[in-house]
Image (cartoon, rainbow, N blue to C red; front, side, top):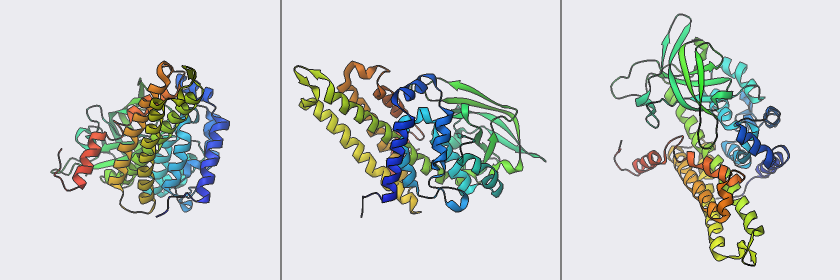
Length: 384
């Protein structure tokens, strides 16, 4: 058992960290966070490094490497994602999905444009009446026609939809048979400019870009189907493992950003005749933040390694996401106690990290549902 990164992985991390320092200074990230914008030039530079294709096979147009490599990249860069432009959604629901289950046409015509940064992707899956109960709440439908399909329905909390060129839409294409709700669901690659597609922004406390998306008689051709008709949910399951691991890596990035800021504050802030970092209570807070992040990091790396080896990693991915979200949020919340009133202001990056990590205790699967899955894997009866 080895815990060392390879030389290539160490170089990747160093290059990504240098990119953030050079292209995403703190004031730039804060400005884009306030405005809800990103820098197109920075996005293109990010893509020019081949990072949008990291973890995808070279024979399919990707940059090679493994999911663990992608995790290291996300951990090194997500604290500055507001300036970069939300790369993970495009990497996961665009690159990974098209490379794994996309058609030849989708891989040859769309994937290269994704990899060079020309287009962005977002997953449109959550329904207004649902949440974790994706299949039970699904009301969005796609009806087959002579020319292709007609999609009708509504999705909510579609992260990155406002700037996405393509939406991966999950819709029911056949009725539920018995209790098998996963059957009869298909995936569609929809150009966001298609007539009938409309978006309404949703204001959220972490200032992320998320939207309601409406599909009103949206016509797409037969080539828009990703994977097999009526078996799209089975095709998306491995991608959901990737999503959970990637989300966990982003939480690590935000938690580490919080720890870095708190350490700097503790070393420079003076009170009662010296720096506050000399006080045992402050040291305990900071040490606890470090331990929380190290615990989560080990679980995230292991899940990514299992997935990279082609081994079963569903429970490990779910557990890693739950622990990374809980621990990163707890680290940020503990950091608030060290920063005091300054941490409660938006001048503090910790404030932004605190708001961002809070979301991922709810999404992309709630931590309560993650615990249900873990309990079931231990042999307990299904509880929902």
